[in-house]
Length: 100
Image 1: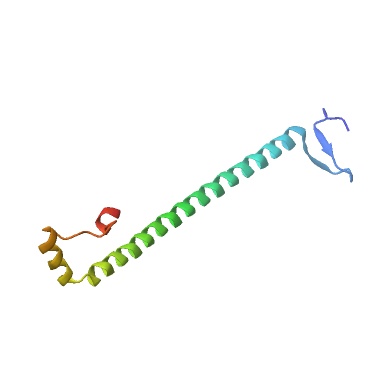
Image 2 (image 1 turned 60 degrees about the vertical axis):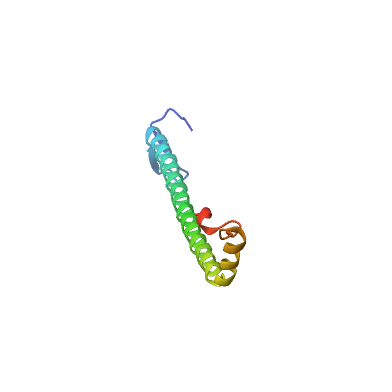
């Protein structure tokens, strides 16, 4: 097959497309593939960021509930004893106000 001829022929002698048209079509297919890959990768990044923010928010809610439960279970009688002994109330290690 002569590559310089303007028309490529397939086995059944049907005219397909000119040499320039075939190259253009191949370049367009490569460009379309590249665009699809970029769009899919951007969507994956956006979805992963959304999931990360949702998980962070959920962890924050759970930890705040845990902190409030600790505060509710605290006995006021022991607080008054601590005030008498040391002059101020002892804070829990890793208190909730410092975490968030």
